[in-house]
Length: 343
View 1 (cartoon, helix red, strand yellow):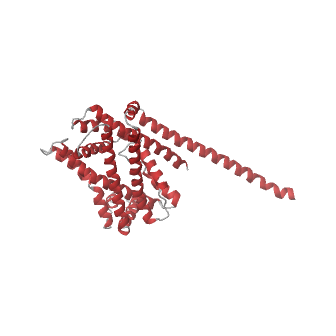
View 2 (cartoon, rainbow, N blue to C red; view 1 turned 60 degrees about the horizontal axis):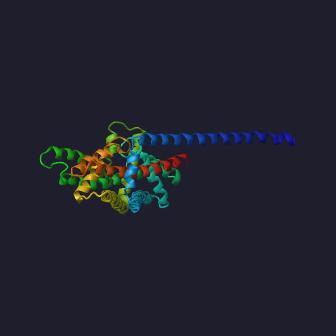
View 3 (cartoon, rainbow, N blue to C red; view 1 turned 30 degrees about the horizontal axis):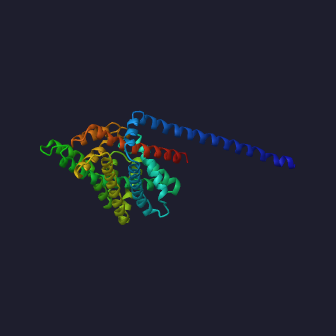
């Protein structure tokens, strides 16, 4: 009787062991697939990148200059993360700051090496908040919506100055209507972030209203819920919104300051309007739907700096330093993204 009563306990142990082994195989297979995709993504993005020219340009800089550029990029990413943290922490006080920094770098890595105008890694932000802190997908998405709106708002402010700088610096002639009409075509979509934030504050949800004219499926309802939560944040946490806007503008100014340092370290001396105009041309190049704006960034700097009498070789040097920075941060971001997705 004792033997018969104890025998049924054996199969479950074997079954549990078998399940555990199959789980380990699935984890290893998933890890292999994730890193294979990331390596392939990195390969296809870098196979046309001028790595030798980048190294040659970097070798012309002094060590302290490289450290300075790295330092200002650390500050920029701390500010970018601080903006998102202020938004998230307004609703959930237990959110830690520094783990969000790794997520923001991972987001940049995925966005930089994929098609599109510097977007694509935002789902990592949503997944992290949902898995780590138990936030719903809708609420997590609303924080990312606000984060992107404030990022675009700061860029709108700088690009408004930049488009003015393009005219002031003489890249495009202010005489005649064609240049002004082409710039107005850029200004109209760039005005959307501040307009959208005002709508959200007043309890109006334009994206939801537009999408519901065509459908009211689950995706539309999800977007509507996220937009409503973003509006609630604007109304309930006005002080956090103001601080996040201020931090976002500081981060954008830091990017312009970094561009000034890059040109200065390469011996290129420009006026204020010329610096802002050249930076604007480079920022607009990243809107081209190719990974990292490959080719478009170089062309933008040759065109913009060439208008100021800077040689094509020097302009390419500026683009190569920007490319080196983005590849370094983007590659590190892909590594963080791989680890995060595996977990």
